[in-house]
Image (cartoon, rainbow, N blue to C red; front, side, top):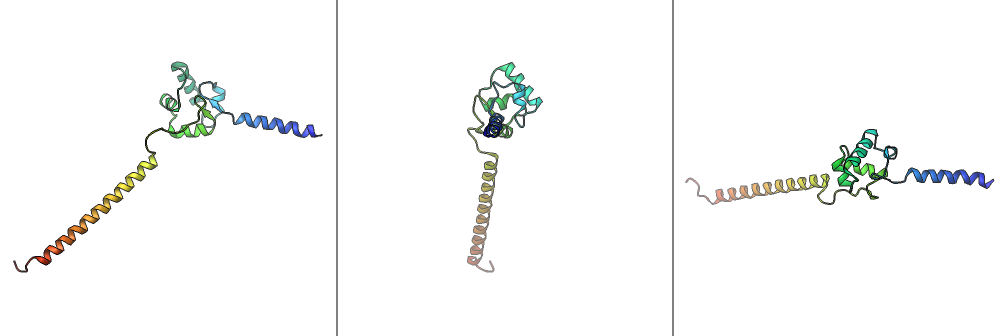
Length: 139
């Protein structure tokens, strides 16, 4: 009785483990690449053709550079779905700020510039008022 229960459960667990197994872009065939969410037949063919033509991919940046349609945003999704390059998941660009970080920096710079402009305007107004007070009337 117990065998009838545990045997299917064990088989199910083994199958579930294989579904979430990582697929390395340098070793995978077309079927394995197509099993990754976000990789369709066109992308898998492009990956295989590029790998055949110019050899294995060194890292994620190499994959992004050589295969059209695989960019940083797509690489994050593919890595989360189980795609690896030389056994490594995508970690993002090593240097440079993110797009959001760049936008935040621009917004901060603009706000500082506006604040400086307002401060300058106020100082000029105060200086003009003081100058008008000190100037003799009628001259």
